[in-house]
Each structure stands twice: as C-alpha cells, then as structure tokens.
Image 1 (cartoon, rainbow, N blue to C red):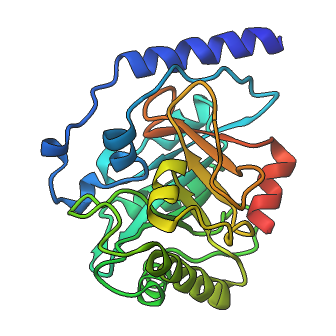
Image 2 (cartoon, one colour; image 1 turned 90 degrees about the vertical axis):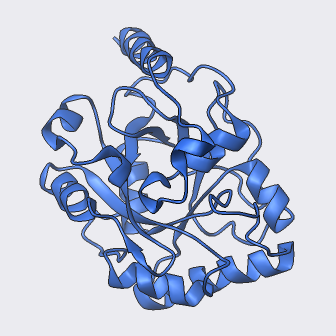
Length: 264
C-alpha cells in the first residue's frame, strides 16, 4: 500500500510540474500579488529536478497559496490530500492579500492546519515594523493546535537589489528584529522561509536562527544542503505545482510533527 501511494503521488506531482507554466520576470513585474513564497527563488535558482516521491505514510503533504491563486476550493484541496497550508497575508507595510480571508479562514473551516506568512521587504522599513504590520493583518498565532506560527518569507528582491541593499550584518539584524518582535508578542519564534543560496548570499550563512522552524525552498529531487544553524527542516517546498493549489510542500514528519509545529 505504501509503495502504491508513493508511486501515485510521484506520478501526480511530476505531471503537475510538466504541465506548469512558469512566470518570467517580465510577467511578475512590481505587483505584490505576484510575489509569493518561491516566486523569486524559481526565477533565480530554477527548477533543478523532479520531485522526490514520498508517501502519506512518511510525510504530510501540504501547500502554500497567495492572492496569485485566487479563491481556493478547500474541499477539493482536502480531497487531494492537503494536511496543512501557509497563506500569504502581507508584504512590507502597505500590502494585504485580497484573498487572505477566503484562504486563511476557508482552510481552517475545511479542517486544514494553517498559518500565515509575510513577504519581507527589508529595504522599506525595519523588521519590527513589518512584524507588527503582519500581526495586525492576520499573522498571529494561537495555541489551538490548528494554527502554525507565522512565517517570514526571505528571498530575492522582486523590485531591485537581491539583498535589499543590505550587507550580511544588516540583513541578520533586520531578520532578528522581525523574529524578536514576533516572539515577544506571540510567544512563538516565526518560521523562516528561504533558500540556502539566498541565505548564504544575503546573510553570510548566519547560523544564529536555528531555533526558528525552517521552511526551505528547493525544487529538486533532493533537499540538499540546509542553511547554517539548522540540522533539519520543518517544511520542504519542493515544487511550484502539483496535486494541490499553489506550491507543494512536505512536512518533515506526520501527525506528531504537525502537532509539535502548531503547538510549539
């Protein structure tokens, strides 16, 4: 049974990638609706291989969505195997996703464990200000066992300089400010979403965030090297299309791991 599940999921996910249409930088432009977890990583790092085949006995399948997907059919997502989802809430200090309520509340009502994420723009305001903006617009956490800690999306700048005009020390300080503010207000460290290549380039591969859950992006058949400071990932975003709406993710574990991530 486990082998049949593995083969079935592999076939579905490979087919999803084969049929996907990938945006070019010109298509994305400066519209924040087009910035989502991995939108810039795909452009800079590419899709490097076919997704690895897990079964639902090994890992929990989940996804992430944003306004880019529009309204989501949550009953269909549950039917396709969704166990968890991250939903884009905010970007910088001026943008809130128009689809956030439908996606965040709809997934919860459908029984999916969900969390919100913030697309960080370190060149427009300080980390504390963006954490507070995120918290004011849906990025909070509650210990109900069905809400994941808010996530900070750190990736290539869609509007200009890759590292937002910051050197490694400045970038680390910005992320620290966001993380500390979020923890002070919720009691939880935020999840950090990033790729190893971006983290090395823009933080100097800083190892000091190992206490934050890691949501790693790498579109390949293997997860590869993790950023310094993390021994394992909480979530692996392994493909930008597949059985579920939006990007495809594997939780590093099943029910117990999901419960631990939700409760802290």
